[in-house]
Length: 125
Length: 158
Image (cartoon, chains in turn red, cyan):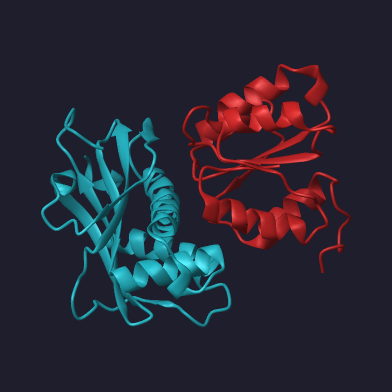
């Protein structure tokens, strides 16, 4: 699942993870993402989450997902411009597994997914 | 603002070049050239407000032609297919990414607003403020500018 209020950024992230054989569902903010989650038959394996979004921001989304046991298996990765140490700590404390700062390269996303065990090392080469 | 906390034109250049390399010039064929363009343009101005310990705007300004090329590159379409909505989305995201990186150079704590995009913004009151720094460049033969404006504390930022 790719959650970002920018269509351009959703497209960039979609291209990267589609290339890694993930099926992608998109949402424009945290509220829309919660609605999409409720509609899906299976819990997504991974969510790439922007921080600054209207209606429900990324931190609020992470907090809401972590409060619901049925989403326990979902890996949450913040993909955001928020680069201050305190913000990273807040996101990780709320339940995010990883943190990528924009601008990023495709390799940065791939490396994090390898580190999280979501794709095998070398699968993307 | 203390001098040690102020972003500089060199900071803006470094941030802008990273953003271009990541999103607009991934194959190295359309670099952002750090040369002042012949003529600056504010046909399209995308910005994000920063508020908190510091108040102001981080702006990306360019010509209409450059805004179309940027949207086309980000959205994977031809420049002739680009709509106003595409430009708002793409330029807004560029301002958001650049603004987030500039925010890390400003006093803490600050928060970043959501991006806004204004057209033909030469006399736009939104753009009133004291310019702290600027990076002027040429991209695909078109003017491109990144700047930071400081607003009086408590003043309108968005």
